Length: 392
Image (cartoon, rainbow, N blue to C red; front, side, top):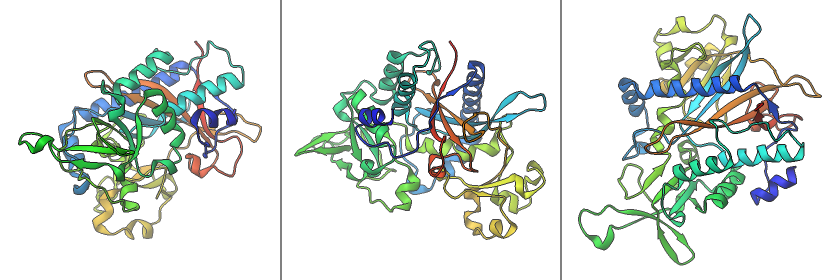
C-alpha cells in the first residue's frame, strides 16, 4: 500500500501513514461537519470579530483585496466521553486554510483497495462522489482559468512534507507548482494607466502571467525562514487568490475565545488573562490548561500545564499572540494491537465563489502522545495519517 501511495504521489510519502483505516457512524461525522460550518458562519456574521481579527494580522502580511469568505476551511475535533457514555465531538481548532484534499482522497482509495473494503463504505462527505469531488476542487482552485495560469504556491514546495498532495492535485487539475519566492511582479500591460500589475512565474524561458494562486504558503514559515519575496502582500495585483492569505488569520486559534458553544473548549487571550480578565472561563488546575501561540503550524510552540513563570516570561508586547485554552481529555476510541489510540478528525471544507461552504472529506490522525500531529508520533506503530469510512 505504501509503495502504491509513493507511485501515485510521484514522491516518497515521508510522514507516517497508519496501519488501519478508521470507521465512524455517519451521524457523528455529520455532527462535526455541521458544528464547523455553524461556527464559521457565526464568525463571518460578526463584524466586530472580523475587524478585530483583521487588526491582529501583522501589517506586512495584511494582504490587499480580501474576498468575502474563505475558499477553504478545516475543523479539527477530538472525541470526549460524556457522562452518559456518548461520544461527543470537541473542537481542537479551526483554520481557514487548505489541507491535503488530493492526498486524502488517494489515501482513502488506497485503504479501500489494499484491505478489500466493502465498496459500499463511504469516504466523501456532502453526498459527493469522485467526479463531483474533483469538479468542486477544480471550481475552487482553478476557477475557470486556463490551468497553465493557475499555480500552487508554497515555500520551497519540493521539500515540503505535503509534496505528495501537491503532485496529486497538480496532476489532477493540470496546474503548476511554484516556489512563492520565485513569483515576480510584471508591470501593467503596455504601461497604460488603469491596468494593475500582474504576477508571473517562469517556465523555462517563458514568463507566464498568473491568473489565480492556490495559496499553500504559511506566513509563519515565511517569517521563520526569512523568505525574501519579490512582491508585496499589501499591494494590489491583477490576480485571484484561491485561499486569500488574510483568512489564515481570520479563522484560526484567534477565533476560540469568541465562540460560545458546547463543543468549544474554554479559551482566553494571554494578555487578557494577565490583566485579570477571563480567568473564570478556565477550569481549576494548571494541568488542565494549554498555552498555544496563535499563529503557528503543526503544533509548534504548544505548552501543556504552563507554569506561572512560563506565562509571565512571555514579553508583554507578545502576550496578545498567545492563547490559554482548556485541555480536553479525549477518549482513545480506536483499538489497535498496541493498545487504544486517539483519533483526531479533521473535517475538510471547500467554499467556491458564488457557492456555499461544503464539507467534502474527513482526515484522521491517530496518535498516543499528547500531540496528534504526524511529526509527534514518528517512533510509534499504528499511528499517523488515516482515513474515515462510514456505512452507506
